Amino acid sequence: VQLQASGGGLVQAGGSLRLSCAASGRTFSGYTVGWFRQAPGKEREFVAAARWADASTKHADSVKGRFAISKDRAKNTVFLQMNNVRPEDTAVYYCAAGWSLIHGRFGDAPAYNYWGQGTLVTVSS
Image (cartoon, rainbow, N blue to C red):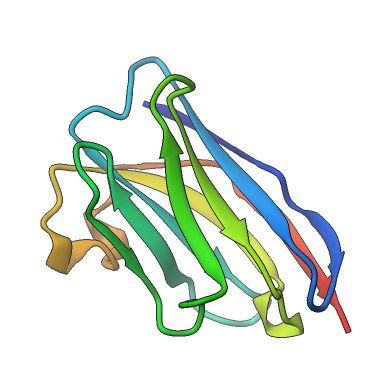
């Protein structure tokens, strides 16, 4: 599975941005798709994930109520809607796909088999 993340850019604090993760080579069927981010000098952290097969999702506490993961089956694409962004949301955002993950492993980066190239989100204060 090849993943293409897009939609990053410069946004002011309090603004919104939508990231997209498109798959090529095959569909997301059977996979959980996750978003992770890595800020300069910091470790990669989990943001959100959704299982393609059902409505199961998980969001990190730091983004609950502000970010929402969703999917478009027709486009074979997963989105991350980012609202009320903050300067601390500045990071490179990566999408990843993990095969047949249980909900308890949605936030576990090593559980994901495929990774996209990342898209930079910069939030200005």
